[in-house]
Length: 388
Image 1: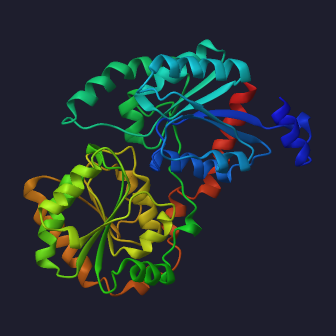
Image 2 (image 1 turned 90 degrees about the vertical axis):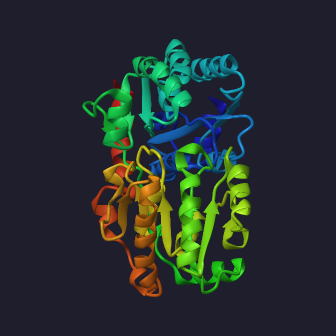
């Protein structure tokens, strides 16, 4: 209460009209798509009406505390669920009960039971479960866990959100009564910039290279194995081809070792986690997105906003293909590698004409991925829930 008082006093805001506070529970902060989506909405929502607070793990690699507190939000650091599930749940119970949160918005998909159950017991009347992902048959152990937890997570939730229709159907059984909250972006931020392109290429020593880019967490879902397999063939077809990988994750060392074993170390640049991801799209000539599954795929939207050609797996939802002149879906079996190579060669032939990438891609906004428009809808939903 004192925190609220001094925050609003400093900004000259009447305490009578203080904003609705929403408690967001994201899960592991790794610089990935889910937290990027949530932060995009947070940065653009009207803070005089709606304020976000966050529950994060006390050992996360990414720290959002400074950003959140500057915008008037709070960050609660608690034990990671995968290390101490009971400590995690008890901490959420105390946070919700002591701060009297009425609305809890959970982004942990099938793990939502561990956040929303204690929130329910602590008195949260509105419990939003937000689906950001799906699954694939080959991920057997993870699938078993998801299938066991899914009905419990959906039961304790009383509001249903998803990033796409396919994510809604997978988590909730259908997209009926599910609010589809688009993975919207700041469109103006994702525009091709020749200065970014030239400066980054000079810094990385990649002038005159045909650069294939990938941004994603190093985990099974993102299918780095297939990506490297394609690239190992590409280098024999396109001498100037160079791969740039961005991200971190449990399979990072395995993938980097595979790159070394294939003798590709001089043809691959690993950039780790970056805070300037929007600039990197200007560096790339093509984007690979061979994931086994995605709820939508934020990077696909960002790439198309920058008018960057993108080849994606057939498992990516159709909603991610916003501009069909840029995006193409391909199968990801052993027999389909030549398709990826052929498509890449065609894009390579046109890669010197980067002038065609300059300007705003209006298709992104028209398809509902402009954060300035979409944030108004989320704001209205929160205001509606707070009255009920």
